[in-house]
Length: 102
Image (cartoon, rainbow, N blue to C red; front, top):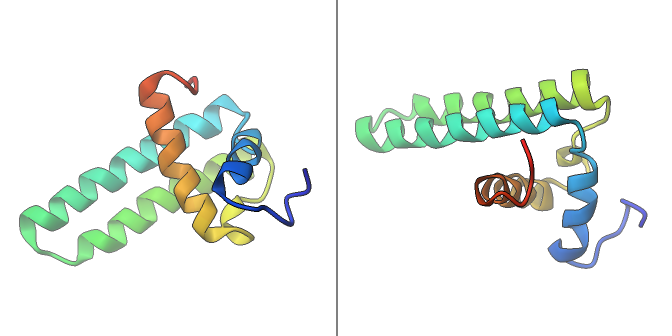
């Protein structure tokens, strides 16, 4: 399937997983997503909006290092930002469920 056109998230997600075939990349995504949740917790606990910036830096920073240095591809965020964001969290949940291996 060409990554240029998807008819819904269900069609996009297999492509997303294919773009995350490198184990280290998936691990970095997992760490980044976990840090995002911790930053959002801190935002809620402290009310300090700076935690939003930390969440963005953690989530995208870890993911992009995984793509550029280990997966050797461009993050799907650049062409499919909404589906990619959704894919990050579905993959995160799938890792916890044991459906995607770390």
